[in-house]
Image (cartoon, rainbow, N blue to C red; front, side):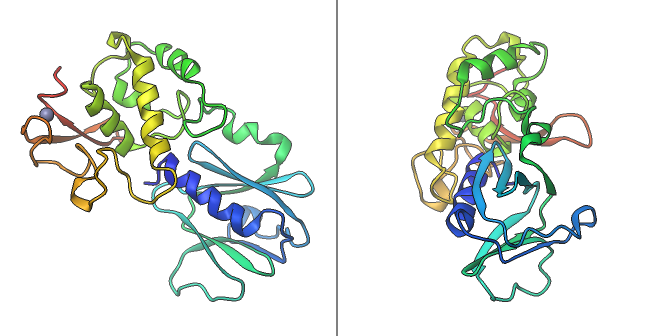
Amino acid sequence: MPEGDAVYRTAARLRGALDGRVLTRSDFRVPRHATADLSGRTVLENLSRGKHLLTRVEGGLTVHTHLRMDGSWRVLPAGRRTAPGDQVRLVLANEQWQAVGVRLGVVDLLKTADEHRVVGHLGPDLLGDDWDPAEAVRRLRETPERTIGEALLDQRNLAGIGTIYRAETLFLRGVWPWRKVGDIEDLDALVTLAQRLLAANRTHAATVTTGDRRPAGQTWVYGRAGRPCRRCGTRISRGEMGAQPQERLILWCGDCQPR
Ligand SMILES: [Zn+2]
């Protein structure tokens, strides 16, 4: 599932292809907006808020998309055919480029003035210009009984973390994922580290938390179940956190992250 850094890069690609250019075609392949037509409007800007993407167009409209589990935006030269079998949900095209949204989890069109309805619930964006660690900590502390693992994935607390950054951040801080939020003293250091990890990866496609860019060396625990911990040699554990059907993967070292 794409995390905040991947969504940030997607917004940058959309910006390069669409911002400041007049749309010559739009194709919403979702029932709710099947008749919408944005052609003739200039795209003002593309931005990410946590894992949400906002494409603002002339006339006070915003296209809201979310990649969810396996969606993506591809940028192709105008006129190029998309691959057969692609589940295209939305196309935004100008004379030079077409942005093709494949398997998007959310495709919505709303007034720019109403954006708060889709992103207003989000906590501070780890990759936003307005990143505010103190506010993220304040929101986390509102549910002291919750496990830190679940709280970090709740985008209302802070926006942009998915299962990879959750696992890596908790490992690096030596925090057992099921520890209660209220039992963690230095939440500030935790959210600051998460922000640094995302920021370090926002310009390239690999998720590297170890400083080692080689494919086998990029993470401490994520993707390493059953393999020896890079610090202590203990086998990395793998489990699931959260109530069904929302449970999500967690990896940790039982020695480096004691109960
Ligand atoms: Zn370890």
